[in-house]
Length: 304
Ligand code: MLT
Ligand code: MN
Ligand code: ZN
Image 1 (cartoon, helix red, strand yellow):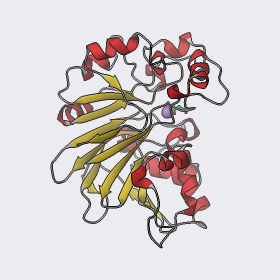
Image 2 (tube, protein in one colour):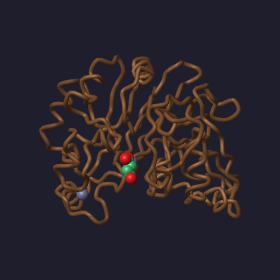
Image 3 (cartoon, protein in one colour):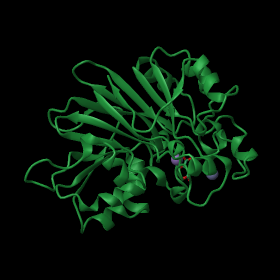
Image 4 (cartoon, protein in one colour):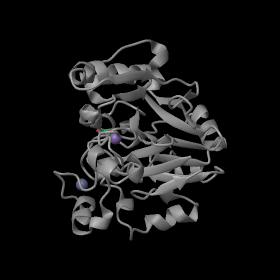
C-alpha cells in the first residue's frame, strides 16, 4: 500500500491567512515550516488514487503528489483521482470537494451516513455540484469496502465521536449514528494485510479505536494541540482541547502515552498553528522522540 501525506495542519493551515501568532509568523519567515491542511492520498490500484479528506488546499496538494497528476497520454483530462474518503464533515476536510467540479469522469465521495447528509444537504454540495459533475455518494460503514472494482485497498470506518461541525450542530438523525459523525478510517492492503489508521480528529480514546490502533502498522493521529489548556492560553478559544473534540498530545488525558504503547509507527497530524510542534527546533520534538513518536512531514511517502 502506498500513502502520501499531503498536509498536516488543522483548520486554517500554517500560516493561517488572518493570524500573526508566533506559529504563523514563524511559518511566514521560514517557508519550510508551512503546513497545508491535513490530508492523505492512498493508491487503490494502478493509476487509481483516493484522497482522505478534501481540504481548501486540494488543488495544490494534487500538484504535489506525483501519483495524482493527470496524463500522460492523449487523454489529457484523465485524472488518477477516483474519489475522496471523509473522516468527518468539518469544513477543513470538506471544502475541497467543491474544487473537484471539473471532474470529467465524476468522483466518489465516501463517508458515514450523517457526514454524507451534512455535506449534501447542509453544505448544499449535492445540489450545487449536480450541474457540473457526477458525484457518487457512497456510505462508509464498519464493513471493509474495496476502493473500486479489483482494488488493492479496502476502507472501513471506526466511529470515534459524535462531534459534528458547527454548521450542523442541530442536525438530528438516528441515535445509533451518533458516533459516526467523526471516524477513524482504516485502510487495508488486501494482498499483504498491512493497515494504516487515519484519525485527524480524535475526541475520545474508545475501546474500538484502541483495538484498531493496536492492529495497525501505521497510525496517523490527531496532534492538534500539545496540551489541553493550549486553546485557552493562546486566547483564541474558551474551551480546552478536549472540549473542542481533540484529545491533547500530553497530560493525563493525552494520546502520547497511549500511542507509545502501540506496536505500529505513530505519527501526529492536524497541528493547530498554536501547537509548539510547528517549530522544528522546539524541545517538544525531543519529548515525542523519547516515546518513539513523531510528527508527520509534509509530502512524506509511506509504503506498507
Ligand atoms: C476541528 O478540527 O475541530 C475543526 O476543523 C474546527 C473548525 O474548523 O471549526
Ligand atoms: Mn479540523
Ligand atoms: Zn496563528
